[in-house]
Length: 247
Image 1 (cartoon, rainbow, N blue to C red):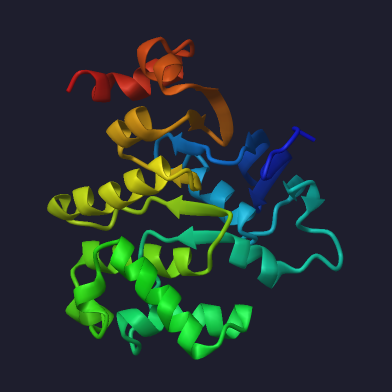
Image 2: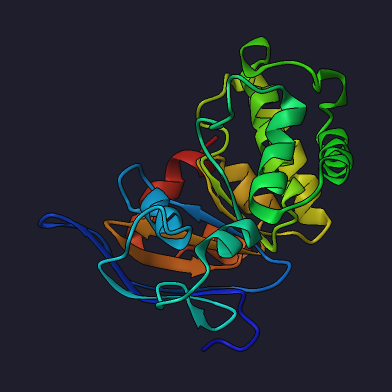
């Protein structure tokens, strides 16, 4: 067990039929770290995140949360998901609820928070992501960037230890990407522990403490942003980054 790691993956495997999507993944996430996971589509990045959140069941290996195996019998999955929040590519907001209600419902149903406290906490985080003027709006009345900021506020309202982001900007129009990345950058500066699957290379380079490059279901290379972006060792990493570095 890596000392003090919040989340640790040991020899994680995931297969769909005969297709090995993740193969012998070993990594650790430490308090206050922003870890970015980059790589081509189909390299296993999102599957790894979904395994960590137990939306997918691993085929082998272990996922440890503070040293506890999250697949062990008797492990409290609902508590774990409250402490390891997830922000999805497609927002996953409840369409029949306002922004405020979206940020209250999990606190009430999962954590047993009373309505007044849930509302205060929801308001705190909606304010934090710049969505206070839209608390009574339903998702259909919001832009993609606004929906994603509500989704981040909803995750934060559960007061998680770690926040997982699954390509949080890939469903957004280009002009809306910046507003979501600005929120994420601010969270990183505040020291929130984040694991981010992203195609935003500038974010990975400028905001992360650690960058993992995945290819063909394995971690092909990892290191600090400076190591990975300025002097990658692996040919696959160089090829992947070459397009970005030419910009």
